[in-house]
Length: 582
Image (cartoon, rainbow, N blue to C red; front, side, top):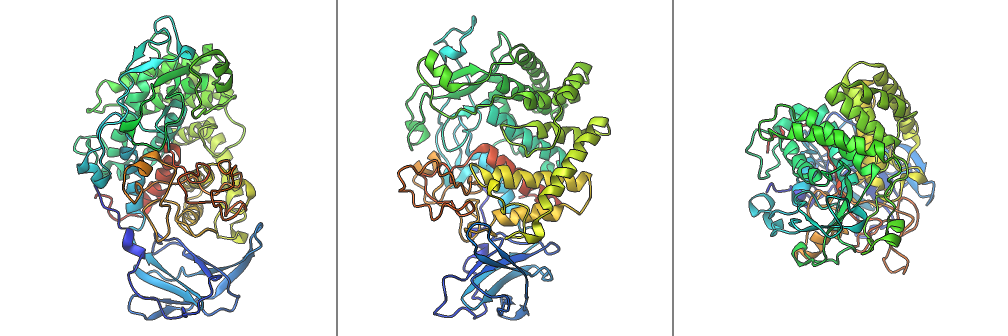
């Protein structure tokens, strides 16, 4: 397994000497703990100083290389903390530095490949989340584990019964990824995760064609990212009822397992109720993958299988427009009751738009085009599992000139311009993090990373070199320039989560969690804290985070969140990295 260079910021050299023995703990320095690119913006945020504070930057030899000034002052909209923005962008020489003022000091690095290891780890995460196969030491190092959840004996739940597959009958539904901190597999979230990563792959094929993640398929002719997507796509194909084309919403145990190893799980596994959203999402991502995998010699039969499966699922969804997944109502009718993640959604026009778009790009059939036109969104929205219209927008933007493409580009421009409008007055010099609605369940992915991906699309197709800086600013926030001082990706920086809500990491006996996992982030709702004993340091929107494995509201991990991390960091790495082969 590739090794993560975790020590790049830690204990490398003594800082410049401004930190006294009586350092005031109220002085804080927030910066990107992974590093900065030589030719990009480098901003550091201070708390607990004044606008005239003496600040120095020293190199590894202790030489003062910069004495930057405060460029502006901000006030938190919630805590009212005063923060001071310091720009050190004139530093362009790769190396390790220390920025210090009286009361605090912090190390940082400048380098040409600073995002490469973390980008690779964000993708390698998906190998570590595989089910139904052993995770081998050759590829996983200390995180190797035996087969868990083979899923070759999966029961048809009464809610999913059909003429050809009555309740209680057995199917095989192996492979795929564990969804999040739990051990279940969900079609809606898997489809979104693959769809987002494939959209980014389509924009950066040369980069991904050369990127080696050290997985069992690395020696074949297919890029590793596509091999990893195929591992989950092969599971998705098993989630379709061959009798009618409908797609089961999820493969699950009745209740969440405890914090035990996969091999210690004992509950039976079921496929549960077909849904319109799962079927449209399935149709979309299978069509997208079939188009991108055309001519692939490692998966020769896949394109035909995926095309037929996508068409069949799309037709089923058209025929069952009200087949929304309603877990509470289902549990009143069928036993056993199911109490795992719902991924409920009572609006399917966005799923239909994405599916029609991908099927039109794959087949060229006019019926799909007309459906896409009918279902097109009126504005660009941040793509999430519950609102996938923008995955369709990304696809139209990539497809070549058309009226639809022009409309999607205009929507994306309005969205992007709105994101960056307030950066110059924000507390952390980023589009993300200054509005209450920025924070909540999965916010670091759904409001920070995915917005960064949208900004990179805007940078490529609307105004080159205008929006990229703002995508990087969101990455800066994610990687340490924020109110908590956490680098929110496990295994990186000098302060990152050690106790994510992740059953494998909690039960494997290894001190460090998987590297490269993005946690959900600050969540002022604190849905997990009814007893009040989780130790949240604050209920303020941007400070409501706790590194505790019990905190599913702020500290869980999930494949869709990591897909957004792959999208943002790998695209930046593709733009900036000097060498992508490990």
